[in-house]
Amino acid sequence: MYPANIEDYQRPASLQEAVAILRGYEPGDAIFMAGGQSVMQAMKSRMVRPRCVVDLQAIAELKGITVDEGLRIGAMTRYVEIAGAGEISSANAALRDAARHVGDRQVRNRGTIGGSCCWNYVASCMPAVTLGLGAAFHLLDAQGKTRVVNAGDFFLGPLETARTDHEVLTHLVFDAAPRTGSAYRKWGLVTDALPVVGVCMKVSLDAAGRCSAARMSLSGLPAGAQRVQAGEKALLGSDGSRESVARAMEAVVDAVECHTDKWADANYRQQLIRTLGQEVAATAFARARGEA
Image (cartoon, rainbow, N blue to C red; front, side, top):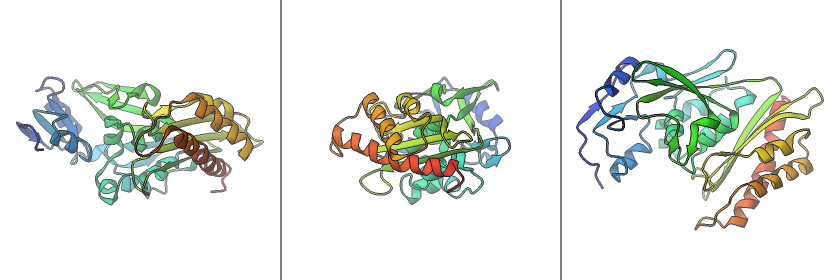
């Protein structure tokens, strides 16, 4: 299909220009386009029918990765840039894990972290990873006001977020605590496919090498990106052994809804959670110890 009639296309050079454009439209009549990998398909299918498309590609202040007390990633930073970012520490290494296998090469060179999170597709990797890492989402509205929304409040369900039609996501901030490691793995029908199941884990270790804090999230299930607190609680005190991780992953399997479709049945998805969970935990614990 072809898109419904689009009255205007704008390519602002600054954030100020972008939000000024919004003020000329009713909420929802003007939409932001990041990499365009998802929204272009939505427009072609007429799932989305904007009067105006505001292309964010030319706004330099929305791009880039910086490290200070934590990690700051501009909303328009592409997957390929995240995948090769050596400055991302072990605490947030799950971002690199995900970015290296998001979509195909074209998607990785055009798609952006902000676009993926704002679209929040049910089987996307980045929403689950940013949720698992506890990202803070920084938003700017048409009146120039800013607000910060934590990941747990940002993702409301598949294709729904806390961002309003008159807000633009400017950047995401991640903490970088010491003795902390994270990892992400997905399983799809091919290496770069959407995840049938994806698992993200972040662990912090105490002086004895045991888990003192944990975050865990999943992708690919009916609820979309979801945090699994039952698994997080079960990991506390763990030294990363297979037995302790296995107990935690059983708690995850008991807590989440797995579905059956043409790609996999519910039992297979449960087994994927167990298997991927062991692999992700091994990597996250090793990174937290400085071993990987």
